[in-house]
Length: 250
Image (cartoon, rainbow, N blue to C red; front, side):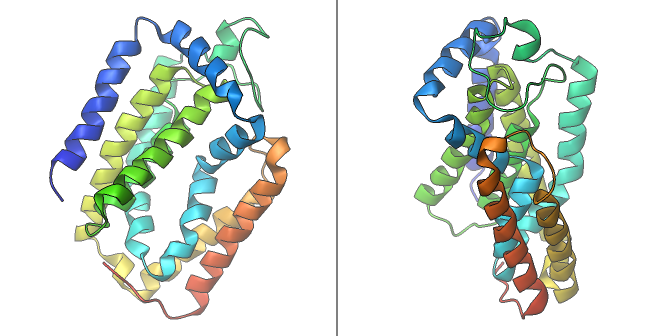
């Protein structure tokens, strides 16, 4: 795949992050207010999907035919965890709810106060987006742009629900994109996803995560039915990959 697909999205996200540093708070208030045109349930569902549990469940059915997608994301996950959780601990920036007055912005779901930078959901969404795009070289430009747009929407949901500043989201997305591309590169060297045992191992991970999604509280009770449906989607996909032969496409 041409290098521009690696460089261009990362460069755009980085430039936007630099541009919003000075007006991070006012930009948050503007974007958060603009997002109120869409229903809180829609933003809650998007934010829930961007969690690690949500993304694993979403990708589980692809193990039947495209196991490299999940393999790329999993190979990227250790570095993504260090990037996201490490950044939160090092910078320890307060979230909007810890800085702004209650009622001055739209808050949807769980009220969070600390460990704002960078956004873990934005990181996860762009790790998965990059994993899909770089592990799917035959995808059309339109498909690649659609995947990036979906990741942007999930990342933006963190502003819409009042959980993150724009800078958190943009830096998380930029880091996630580069880390996801690295995961895809690693998948060309460690090709465990081509073996039945490798697919079964990934299916077991996806199954466990999807089952957990049935019981854990991700802070969005208004979309509990969606959370159950997403869990069922992941359970079905993982169980199918565990129980039948897999038609692997590289």
